[in-house]
Length: 530
Image 1: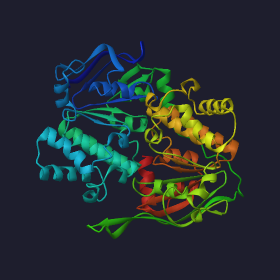
Image 2: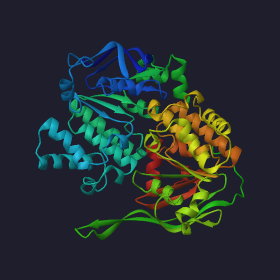
Image 3: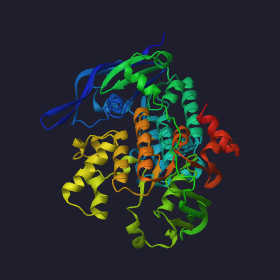
Image 4: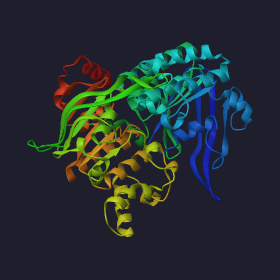
């Protein structure tokens, strides 16, 4: 029988607001045994991440307080351990892969410096050995051109590449316990499978235990030994994985399991005309070297794309991390420099200046991949959602406030929370705020860059249905960038498959999913629907 590595006993967590305490976790108890994987699942805001971050006391104190409970690791209560002793455990005995890599990586330091820092601190390696180890880990987690990425800054990496750097940092010291908070959220299916296999390989090699927090129940079924289901700060069900999926007792567990993306895209007019026309689109970034910063070559992020998006329909853009999906969306909205033709209702956007584009911004919106990074921490939710209304439409403050309330209700957010700030919301709730901000102007066209990646299964199902309903009601046109092919199949009329900046396949969704022509497309589908 495996020994307990970590024990959480009757843990309660609250946040202090003035003289009031807001309880968020209620008397939970969990045990993680050596070498096993415990999956912690539940909707956004259920307390999963707060519980996990409490293990290493990573929540700011105050406002976080622990009214009762203990967390035992290596015969030590981590909640009462001196900070100096806890520092020796963080990143060494217990490591964390955080949910939002761009907020967790230091924007002022290179990838090399950030990985090497933990190796210096916990293993005492010299610079040469630490650099070699960092390079080895970048290779192991599937980073393309690891030698070049080693000296890159976080903003120069795609969302998936940032997540892989976080995974490399967490595993470099070969911890006893890995806390993985949505570790594959930003990864495409092929890299996701690779990372899960890598984590499993290291788990077998090191006897490492894993606390795996995710909303993807397909992953839970593949990697976990036991599952704990959280709802509103309480554990409503806890059992081995097979029992949870085949004989769930709690109604909430059954809702989660049944909320699989399903259905077909909204019916659209068969004679629908193109809203967006792209011809020979290119986005090349110069590689500058030497003292004079001469251009030595180009990173061909997007290379010679030609496609169209019909009015009232959705184009799904899929491909591995770093393939150019997000860059394509930014180029279409003229948020990054590009070459080629971009037409919106026959308007030649590629010829427009920033000033000429401004009146069109109301009709063209974007929902970014990283909700926390795209929401100003100094603005309330009402200010964030209402900012576009202030710029693009007239109306009294009461009318604007009503529109904010209406759109928050549409995306399943409590309008009473509109005067709070982004840091007071879970990752999934922040994504819904970002969706509300885009929808409030009732645009014609929206680029959705991984809009459901941080949402739990039940909320993802609701958001997809919301997008379908809005598309039917307002005739919206979407470009849906995603690595979740099940979601793409449910929502998209056409699919564009990208690899290394190029288009490898493009056509109707039904054709791509039933009879893919390119080997890369077949590989994606095989991994996604395995």
